[in-house]
Image (cartoon, rainbow, N blue to C red):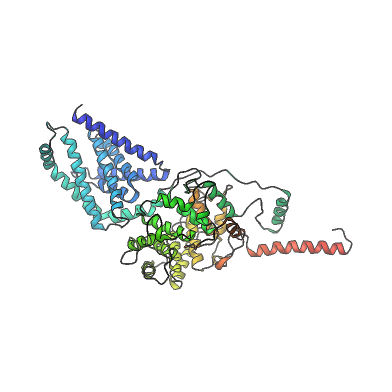
Length: 574
């Protein structure tokens, strides 16, 4: 076998293994969609600059994909970009080499993220990494030329590399220029949306509970008579049905996937645990029969806690579970979080990470007046936009999700006052006519943005009853027969994640959730009151009906009983 044939076969095997690795991860539709979009962008970038020898943003885009999303998506973006762009530029034996080279750049981006241990690289550092990636790509493609040489020795390779050096330098310099222009914004955008793209879409379930029995029929008839919808034993409260759905969706390893039967992920497990904690279930009690609990899963699945979002979510869950973060999986998670905090008080100069970092500090027992909490709160106050809300980075356009999260964080830091009142006003103005919120004002309402808004308003003690429309009624309108909440009126994505966040909003519980009492009886008692809890918000929304309707229903029942007694005493048939 020739050098060319053997190297081609080896690379083809490596690429096939890479795509098999990608398929084994069973990427959901949104991840596949993101990979396709990034690959298309890389292809367009290569074609647009085809007239400039070896200067193109393709390598940068592939590295950003691996750096922000991980090795598997990064490899896929790189390999697909090569084969797709060569449809226009010409296919040949070089294609498989380019697929391997750019796939390797994607994996290299993921390794770079791991090496920096969660610290976001600055513009110059990232540009240097892109320049090195360009040189590495060129050195690898020189090996392709080397396989066609008369001799395969070091001197021959050096001669080939020397000849191609001007082109490789042009590639590296172009990478640095493109990165300096778009790099940090590109990476932050990918990381901003990574949570949604790591999860999958699912069709709504069909399991439900039948409503029947003469007693239930009598109560329903009475409810119709007074315009009242009273939950009955056969038709449990919104909160308890959501809890039932989440518990059915838990895997035996203790974790949660995007929907029932899907593989567990740390992201979805963390949010599910927080939703159930808001409903009164300690995460250590959330376990399938003969299965592991949530804390067991987090202890086993989190290898290094290099991902800052994973670290912060884990601390929030441990706070609700009453588990010390100072010795978890052999690590001091609180110390790790504090080391990752920047000199300006932020985490990665990112509003969302800083809000959750502050909440995680409080969940881990840090006092509201402690230096790390105070510095994070100062950063968030300074990042408030003129319209009163917050975007994912300072000076970004305000959005509902980040505003809701920041309000919870500032209140946890003891900063309730003018700054939170202004944030609450932004949320009021952004509310849609249907009672919900979209991520941005004017967008279609969805359950998750609505939940963030509700939790933020609850934390700010803004009063849900002061809103133009009832957000809890909007959320309840999205609940399906099997207990899960749809994402919106037009889509039903990630039912486990959406249900967990909607559950926290319906229970009107803001982050961080304090330690939850252990035991199923304690949880049942908490859920028994979930339909009548008004909390500090004074809101009329919730699982239960508005108080005026409850009072009317009670008055009607009492009146009927009194009338029957009066008629019996006066000889009239009851």
